[in-house]
Image (cartoon, rainbow, N blue to C red):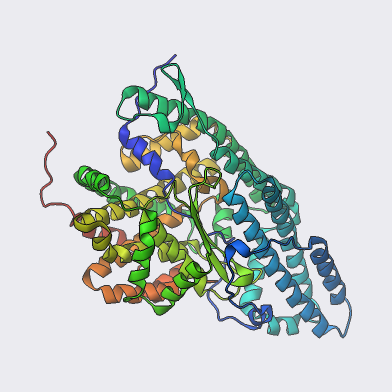
Length: 582
């Protein structure tokens, strides 16, 4: 048997960071032509923010057959004359039904994430997702039929051009022809979630051990780590290969030559995979070597500071409450009060909880909800990050059937709040505040590097979807060698975004660049940085990413020199002459 190379401690620590690499705002995204003011349809939903306590919310399964029958009835009305008001009101009622469906689907999803062994909510998730996918196609059919009918002019006036533009774009991203494939995709995603929480073991000194039993300061502990991850990679990686095949078939069925192009369209990106690839090359040349220098220089000091610190996730709550009473927009404090008073969060470490941190919205009540597994996310900066998302959802108008939210903007809202909260670090961390600030900046650089590396990985996989698991592992190892200077072979299967939200990851990179731009500005002029943050957070639903950057005074990461400028500011954290290695 060929001897395995010894994995480095740095690689092990990096692997751990894969699980700590950010969250996923759980709102399905599709391309939008730009921001708009809420119109008649939003008013027709008649949704107001409610004081709802999460523990008291009742899950009521929507009447799926009735919703389907309403679509059929509306399609029949299109063919009749003199039914304008009735038809438009029927359409508005369908939007209200969809809002309720979305709310119940989100509630079922949260309940499942709180206990992955709950088979009832697992099945509800599958059923509602499958129905929603079919309903989306039926709504596209109904919307097109109305627009092409004698009622088209009245509908255009009632719905507004933005709604119609989104329909025209989104209708190309779904079809009855992919409904069975989409169901298969969701089943594979659910299987991944279950397998991810399984305990993987190996034998060490005649005993079965888990990852928690290992001593990474010993060679045998590192070998055992490698064996465990190889097993985990085999179980989850083959599942990923199945997902890749299904997704390629989905894109091909819809007429796309590339699944990557389809995924970028579904995510509402106003930049291309080629833009992302060029950005990644710039990052690889500029930030990758600087990250290595900063990490080498500060690693031991930061490690010692963390050993001294007893600060945990819960300590972030009073720090955030105090900060929001100072120089932040008043509505941010209102959002946090609303979250706490209504218990619209779940922080916990139950072994059956999904290993994730995210923020979503129960749209029927206009109630954002935060979910954090504190066994995985143990530091207060995760709370600051997630509250950036929470505030973004809090500012949103009621969500219509075809509304969307830009991931690239959403991650600026979260990561920029992390850097603005550095002002709270002296009280949190005392004399180690500066080291924790630098550690946070290193995490942001890491987000850029990981975002680029994982996007590059996915682009290569989907260009060659027949790639074997061994080839995928080798590819991932080579990319990490380029970005980080060491290979990371098996651990990519821990990144749930690959399985559940493909091509999400580049958003961590683009947004982290903007967040560090806010950091650089805050060092010089905190009031200006807060004003910039206030402006960018106003962009919620149906906003174009690059336009929002421009209007908020932030730079385009693809066409400007902001990466080089930020690298220059970060380089100032190093001494003029680095100490020579012994």
